[in-house]
Length: 255
Length: 309
Image (cartoon, rainbow over all chains, first blue to last red):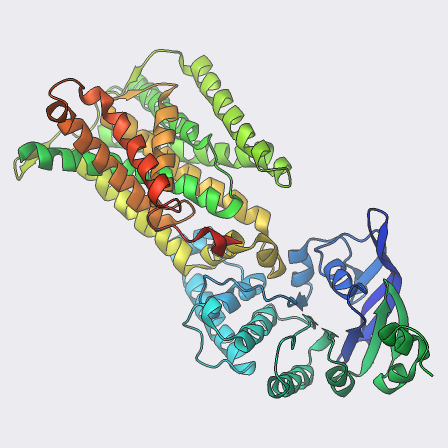
């Protein structure tokens, strides 16, 4: 098993406040890695540092051995690291299919000139882009739903569309920030099936989630953050019994 | 009735020029939420460069075919303005990307003053007249006189607007532009190089401004270092009228503003019993702007403001 992502002693300070303090973790190729912790533990901050939205105050993040911390978001996407958001952030005024096609941006090349001249290469690329985007929508369970505006899709479908859009960038590593928040148990089960399907398609998943049961069912390994520090890491069963984890979640020793 | 149709024609011609300039304002606003007040000056520079090239060519080769000379002028103005637009964004606006919104706005006004004064130093304070190389045929349609120049201006504008719409709606670059307009951060996370998209937006807008600048100086037969100010203000009004940030809105707003202005100029004498003359035509453009801002602040085709958030 090869290492895909390593986080080494990453610290993020906002003024005097340390949102992350020397957090280290490694994600292996092909696994589903869960990141859990109470509200405000720094999970999303870590995602933002990894995807280039925040600069890190200290530490190194490597994807495939190459440092990616403090790079521009689009450069990190180009290296094969995509993400979704806790609060859905689609391009609401574009069609669902167009949203996914924007995700293809990183993997296509034609510039202004090709578009103006309607070059054959450009047309072929556009067609290819459309077909792949449709395939990605079908993969997440949104077959033939591309025509409507993204903002008009049902809530659960918007979450799926966000995943399809992230997939369009052809990531090796896909980071999902609370992908089942606000879903009912039925939808949650469908989503966890999708996660396993993604893993089977060869995509490494990094998952922030509050639903402990889902995390325990789906993840191969789990890390727990609390107050910006990693307090535990390991296979789900181990982590579940870790006293530090229990204390973080329940606040104080359990008899 | 004759005057009505005549003014309608004149208004559509003027309006299509406004629309081209308004597109530049609205594209930049759509992506950066910045009102690029220097855009009118880019139009002026386009006109000035075209005239300088045309003048030089005619001086060197007085017998050169008129159409070729005109084309050379336009083809010199377009890349010059594209470069200017790129430099303005790079030097004046990009360093202020994260500054409060007032800072780039004031910088835009500063850039506009700099460009006006640079133009005044280079080309002087006096009006420069357009050499008589333009098509000067005319036709009578429904009692109105339509010149060849007017037909060329309208046809070319429609062609350009059509092309721009295709570019924005149908291509990879257009998608990247729309995505950036909706959420810069999200577009970047999709692998879009936002800085490139912003640069290209300024470059495209400036190319349109160059063409509009040549059109307006050809239409009035004059160019002047101060011409960009009023033109820019009108085009900005047109963009707001149609709903700033919206391409179709800029086109509609431009045409509408041109027609309102022309009709106003045609009838103001009758309406006020000769008290006010057609030199008050500017009143109508801004009156229309005020009315829209009062009754429909998002513009005719504008999206709800909350949707942008």
